[in-house]
Amino acid sequence: MSVDAEAAELWNTLSGAELIRAMADGRFPSVSEVDEHLGQSVVGAEDGLVELAWAPSERLCNPAGIVHGGYIAMVLDNAVCMAGASTCEHFMPMFTLNLNIEYLRAVKAGEKYTAVGTCVHAGRTRMVANAVISDSRGKPVAQASAAVLPNQAFAR
Image (cartoon, rainbow, N blue to C red; front, side, top):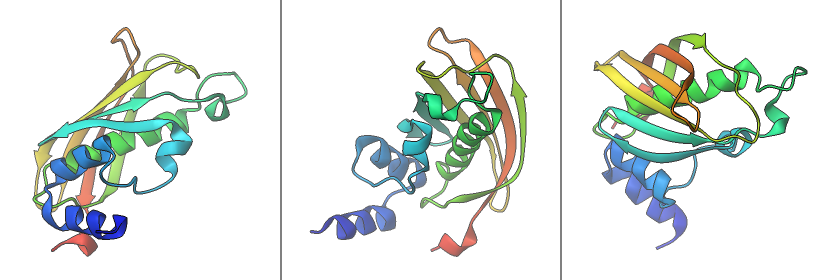
């Protein structure tokens, strides 16, 4: 079976959480080059919960030498969207309706961070999720709450 056929089979048969775990295991290809650019990877998922690893590089830094808040927002957005998607019967990409962020500490290039997204309301048309990025000592550096919308173009 070709790689494309295997990916299609996973897409058509796995739940949202199972497909996200397949991404973590390398059995399903990344959906974009954004993960590589950000230095982000999927660690794991279960229904309503995802974990991402993040190791930002210097190219993500602002002139002050810390990671630009826009990149932090992207990681938080990925975590809340994947948390929502993890609750679906089949994986569905999400549209972000709003993303409210609290920046708590500076994020530094070359350090390792963990982003955990949790879906707190898995509605059929609108979901609410939270995400926290923590440093290697477990201290939160940023958090977000969001409302996301399943992209019905991918409904089966």
